[in-house]
Image 1 (cartoon, each protein chain N blue to C red):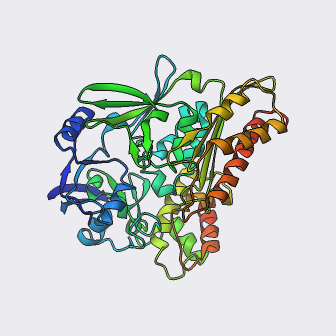
Image 2: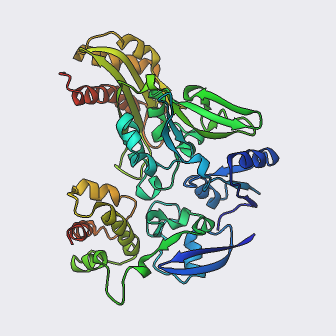
Image 3: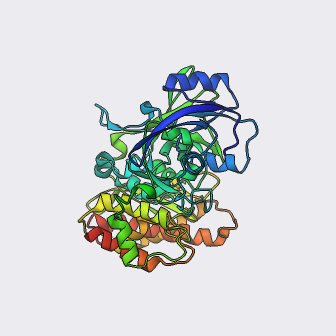
Length: 155
Length: 291
């Protein structure tokens, strides 16, 4: 069961002949060489495989690869521009919001989506938590992640 | 890799109905947040998947000429949370939609899937019960409408006839105009959890007297339910703490929670009784009533 699909991946048009039974997560890692998406839970609970599809945050492990056809996909790889980290990435670095790093790509995509919707708004810590509740950090470095999100909103 | 045998992607509702009638054992996939996980677990053998994820006809939130609010079955919880129509007329549904899973799940899971799964813990179900939502179904024999309370037949079983698909929900103006509602989800975690008990209340008040009162629960029985005897006893009564206590004692006799690994029957009963008071009180206070 193969089908040809194409999508814009981090600004570049890509075409793949995919097995329709594969998840977007598998397409990204196996076909597109995107290694920032991590397999944590495989069931949409940990958020380590989070990407943006037409700017909507989703878990790529429970998203059919076919659904990406004709869409714009953004992953961590597309965040830095000309060697310069995005504001969200820089805020994570500055706040030390990284321990083992496994959850970080997913978290950065969640924050990127959150910041886009809430720029310059006065958001509460509870709102930040609620909007990052789909991402788990097993090192439990949440405090610095919260600081990084707050910083990203200010910049 | 998801374990299915055959994949069909219709473009329209009518095409979907045609494919369902040709593949009687097929399953529909909309948001996929439940079925894809079950597919990974290998719960189905030789499954035919009919993909309605991208059918635009199923994605809408609108008000028709008769002031009915219409919500397409393919509407995601994100669409509901961001809808001005829902915000203005039935904010309790936003509360329910916001309590589903986490952001990634709300961004893709659909309200139609939440209901068609037939589970008692569905966060949108109790609010739709309290709103007397009507389901619009379509099959090869045409369209039909059915109240949500008749749609649930048992755990995981809903009244979807062989070739039918859920098109959407209709909430008539006499079920939302002048009403104030609230949904409270009791769970062990604030996010990414399944309700231990969900409670939705919708009420109409005039000069301190209940004109109407509706209380619905999730996980209080094998399917979502309303406490109709309690509701009847509240209508035309004045707001008082005694009345709240009466509600709490009356709902106890109507519900039928069970013990599961999540919580015991006794604990659930305690939550059910407490939430009846708490949710009602929260609405009353929010509309400026003294209690």
